[in-house]
Amino acid sequence: MEIVEPAQPAQPAAPRPVNNRSSDRIMEIVLYAVAVVLLVILIYPLYFIIIASFSDPASVANGQVWLFPRGFTLAGYQELLKHSNIWIGYRNTILYTVVGTAISLVVNISAAYALSRRDLVGRKYINIFFIFTMFFNGGLIPTFLTIKSFHLYDTFLVMVLPFSVAVYNIIVARTFFQNSLPEDLWEAAQIDGCGNLRYYVRVVLPLSKAVISVVALWTAVGLWNSYFNALIYLKDPKLHPLQLILRNILITNQMQSSMGTGEAAAVALRLANLMRYSVIIIATVPIMCMYPFVQKYFNQGVMIGAVKQ
Image (cartoon, rainbow, N blue to C red; front, top):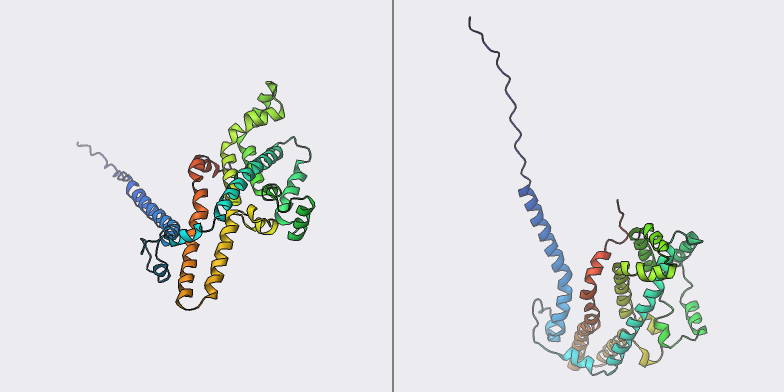
């Protein structure tokens, strides 16, 4: 008698391995394309300002400048360099930026470290006091009277000392200290006989190059571009920063072009418009040269304050 074996149920087909490589490749191409488009959108305005500053004013006014300069000219720069006080403005702005950044770093980084210490007496109320000043201030007139009462009006110090405290920078640096410097490091330093000041100078500062560089860059850019404080608190032209001098030059040329008539007025107006592009280049190139030197620390400081798991 033949024994018939029962039929085995059919085995389900093994699932085909999903190949995500092609989909990842497509997504990568899309992301790179979007990044390139955004890069062009962000860079082109700066590029246009550069080529427009070397182009014929009539070509710029008629919208004929797109990718390359047309009617190459240095008229805008030549007109600006006729004003010898530009070099005085450069000197003053460099001094204000260097000295003001140094003072701001000493004040803000030290305050941030003190506020990051858990053993600071009244730490909570001091933090509230600092944050309160971000939303409320005395106003322009009380500030002006205070500066005059301290005999800072129309002096070099008025540009670097009264406004050296930046609460936002203090909060950023405080967050960095709280998240990046473990308490065990301070305890180990105490065992080695290290005091507060020595620990701050020998341990904290060398480990905080990222946040120091970020705060220094923010402060330097703000001081370099500042003109309002000089407009209010400086009367002596020999103390004016570059931004204020360039502003006065543009206003003067605009007034002169508006007072003329006929073809001469049209030429003066085109030249005044061309000078705007030259002013932007003269005012921004020096501060942009700082970025390559702090780029490494700036990239590290982007994640300052991020939540750590």
